[in-house]
Amino acid sequence: MLEISQVTTNPSGALLLFFALLVAHAAGDFALQGNFLAKAKNRNADLAEFFPQAPPRGLWWNALLAHSLIHAGGVWLVTGMVILAFAELVFHSLIDYAKSEGWISFTVDQALHWSCKLLYVALIFLNWPAGLDWDPLS
Image (cartoon, rainbow, N blue to C red):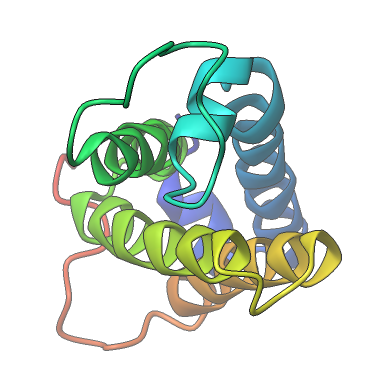
């Protein structure tokens, strides 16, 4: 985990944090997301290869939640901030749902995910809101 004080006082620390968040994102979206999870999180996907009969009811949102929790865990591990992990859980779920509905493309999906990471870094770097304890473990 990065020392948040390094990020809030040093632009190169903010860049390092952004890079670490992108590494965590790549791990969650590619290395830690197998074929089953990639398909099952989409409520419109054909899951016949996994379930010859009908898949269990509600499987798609459980898979989407599991995938988003992996991402939330990555944000938490990198930043140490539960509030940002929760934000990632919500944002990642909404963005991936929009992609699965065909409302956005893969490229837009990835751009939105990267934008969330940039937002987290900006919030930390700018220490906004000022009263929030960004480093509760210190």
